[in-house]
Length: 446
Ligand code: S3P
Image (cartoon, rainbow, N blue to C red; front, side, top):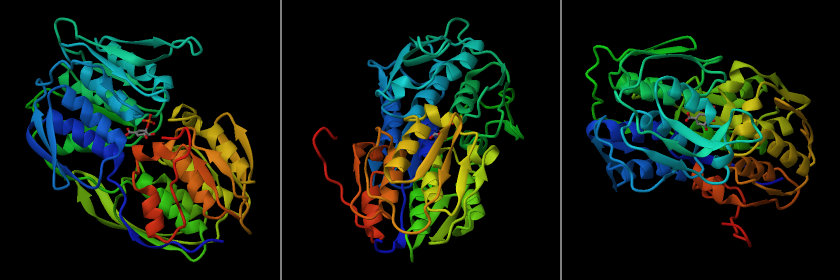
């Protein structure tokens, strides 16, 4: 077994909140300041898209200073907007671009170009937007990037919309709500389960008349000034990044890890609840809030874990944490069942298939279901060291690295460049906690 992980470490700013802060700062009237850790590549893609549409932004002493152009100030970009690996960039931009009088093209890397986009195009078309994509011949009715959006036809205004989303998706909900800023009537969005609500919290904090009742959100532009004020935000630490450290602390014996000033929005804390049910050692202390987002400190330590059966709304609130939840399950006593997680098949990779093969490579018995995984834990003794491909997926790569901390020899995760999309200093952070991790580029890797 390896050395314990001990210490207090920073994590990058919350990727979801930073996307929204950058977009709304670009659309605000005046100069906004966004701080809170280094931006990963996904957030940089969002910033790049705004810059290409005339928003000026510069980093000064770790603060991103954004000169907002106002809701009607974006200019036609001269080139396609490259969203890289970031689904949030592409889908949230759809909501904004749907309302513009100019045309845009949105492109992404190979993974993003496979991801479903009809879910965001369909509601925006219903309120008058033009959005076309590449027809996906294997999935009837589906479209994928590159997307061609706009220009918004005369009378150049989106209509009101009442929409029920088929899946709980904060990206879809956010695109619809953002488009509602330019609509001539109210927007109602209902979801099957409540997805993360960062857009609602930030818009409400900036004075947009918006209200949530259960899984329904309403935005009523009547009586609103029609401008977003400039703002300052210190983006909370990313709980989804901290999750890798919190889980590593649980499974590496004698560990004790603190993560300070991390986002504790209840629509994101599903993993902490599941971890408590598994007998995890965890303490989360609330420490106030930032532009409507709850923040706190999390202390994690090693623990004896028990298997759980989990699904439904808590899995929606842990949707990005299912890969690392698999690492907990791999070390828990008994059979863990993860249900209702079919959305994982259309993330940066098919994460159910990816995790099934990663776990098998470490010698853990796993059964793949259409909407989840059944994992037979190996609570005693080390796992079998493995060489595993990341499939270009940052969360798969980081989970495999965490599993490698309890393996019986060196583990090799290939193609780890993707980690920079969300946690550029991941390896260094594990090293700072005492882990033996090295990043070596090999042939064909970037
Ligand atoms: C995100 C929403 C989630 C999540 C993604 C970030 C967001 O996707 O998986 O990493 O910032 O809105 P869906 O909304 O598609 O579930």
